[in-house]
Length: 386
Ligand SMILES: Cc1ncc(COP(=O)(O)O)c(C=O)c1O
Image (cartoon, rainbow, N blue to C red; front, side, top):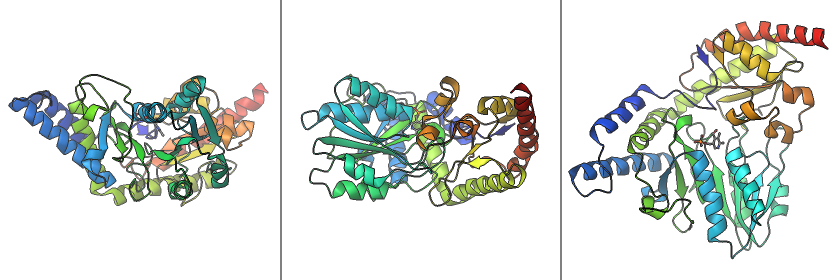
């Protein structure tokens, strides 16, 4: 099996599985309990929080565990919207955000909030001039993803922060860093980001766990009320096995983060070269360095339907996707590639190959052995049918 769908999710590291299992067996106390089992669980919880905080170079007080990227994005957008509604009801986001941002904003628009969507260029990168124009006195929050999940395009977060800082009433800055965490440097303090989203299952941790970084002066209305865990921001008994597994994944990712990033980048560039050589009319939708993350290569094969190619590769034991996991099963074309202005056959023929540190050197070659004949076959069939 060749797994090239790491932007959708990653295989958990063996050590993560062991850690999760051990916490279930041994550290099963409730972190809020005052007896010894509770104290041990609380220690594990706080050690895990410190591991995540260290990787982001922030204080553990500023890290809150949630059920993942989707919940964190919901918490930020709804939580800021409600907490600061008296100040204004205007939000700004890019047109290429993940659905866990875009669909929350759509729901908020139905409740009377106003949202301005910033367009992107052909590379999928936002127009900073358009961002400047979009800002108003009543803008509460600007939400910009760090790395796009479909193309790997990197947004200029520091440039965004500079623009916001120069406003008379600077809005808050939220960054969805789900695809950049562990792939390129993510330092919210240095980049003057107020709120940041990370998720465990994209870095070989368990699913259903993630975190919010929130700088201490920012206030949020919680989504979930209850026992007041996570300093009242996210009630519910903490999912300690997943939290500890997430922390272990963070430690393993950041132990030799540069080597892992170089490995992914190397595989991506090998694939890019081979595509250029063997399928010269394939169009690479991922921008060139330094505007792309190391792990994603989005490619259009004009004359081929991406979904059909995914199935063909799957029958050869190769797992890739047409775009984001949700887009690929529910919508026929990607809102991201559409926003980039791709032509119809490039939209329909788009595929995403995404790497992790677990992919092997020979896999781009092995992919090409199956990909080249599959593209040829599908084009032949397409011509016969049309
Ligand atoms: C950019 C981005 N944001 C948010 C999410 C949602 O994260 P989770 O799957 O942890 O809810 C994803 C996952 O697909 C993503 O790629």
